[in-house]
Image (cartoon, rainbow, N blue to C red; front, top):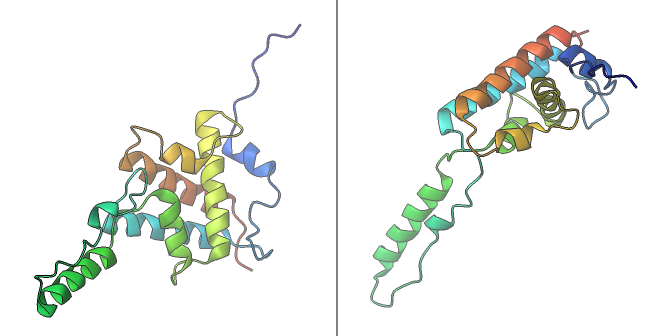
Length: 167
């Protein structure tokens, strides 16, 4: 009976185990630089709007019932105030922020999917767990923004180090 411990998981080893890592949902390959840019744009976005461990539905901002004594002017003021609150940038969790950047000039669905998988790879190497998931890791009770930011910074560095170069 062998008592040797399994080798620790490494980012390089995990990347080698995922030959399709750098292919997006379109089937096309993305560069490490494109993925790094997406991840860094996610950091900037979360620093601007705020990060939260789990997404809040905003139910606390529900529009109340119309009071018969309200004037049209009062109703419009209430409605406009509610719209401003709902439309204001609100803190996002990690998957929502990554997805948001996919709909900007800083990313697309391919850089989103590869960036998300790359974050999974980094978490797997950090936790030495072959099935760890970055979304679950980031939403773990007690997780902090500096830890999540560190994950994104590390994943961007990994993308630049191991990702395909532009042709």
